[in-house]
Image (cartoon, rainbow, N blue to C red; front, side, top):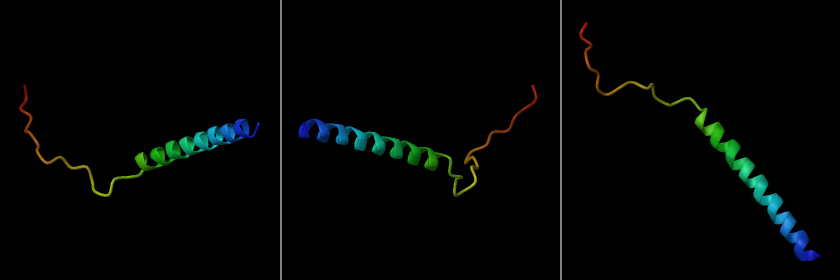
Length: 48
């Protein structure tokens, strides 16, 4: 029984860690960029 309890607690801890990492990744991806997103190269459009 102690092994079963240890396995269950390990699974719960792993699930909580995965949820926390997922929420952290979403928070990082929704952060605004530090610099404006300006293209390095621009091409002129010709009417046409």
